[in-house]
Image (cartoon, rainbow, N blue to C red):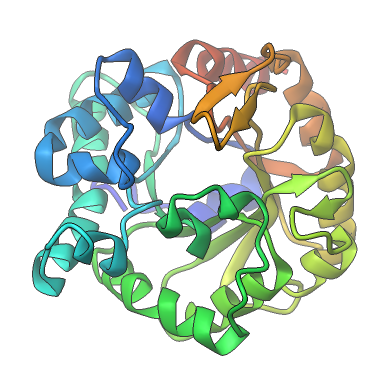
Length: 308
């Protein structure tokens, strides 16, 4: 936690609603950074770390309470493909937490008087493949193999002392089971967030079954959905709250659709901040945006939640 407060994020969730940031990649792209690399925003951990701090700061200044780090696509295997040693990869993965902490420090120095937290992003196995399989799941790996993939970077992120681990954009209940195993004993709370299509995970499992995996996991402080269409949120919030009894986390995309083959967004934005108060009524306590949701939209979310 920041020195500004000793209040934990789980305590804050018990007391009210917390505003998440928006899409890190679109904020970086808006600042002119090329994210076409297979490492995506994780490339900037080595090449332009100050750009990541600036992006996090933009969301804190817009009203976000939580910054999600640039470690979504940061893996030992992905860095190894670029000739980065395991030791240096661990430094870069840990740096993602430090950069978000620095943004919180700067926001407090600039006058922010509320608690600010850091969520260490843990993307799915498919994010490392950079072939769109993170939107499908079903990688052909066992739960144990997926656990062995995730545990080393989870250990590095946990050692960097984030406030929470964001197990996010998970397309498959099997991968969720692996992640739930991998976070045991790390001493850092986590949220589990699926990428969904309607009332099912991207891999096709019913959300009731997928959410139920986390119901008795002590490490998991919130369960929900992200990187999905805004229209898919309402049902997911209700289901997650009912099945798990835990606070719900939601941060959908703008409503546009990602074309993995063309590496481009299609369609039009449908997300509006007017929706967030309904999500809160249904049980959502961590609310923000994912891809293509920028600081202006997060400012709208913050206003709606703090005045509603």
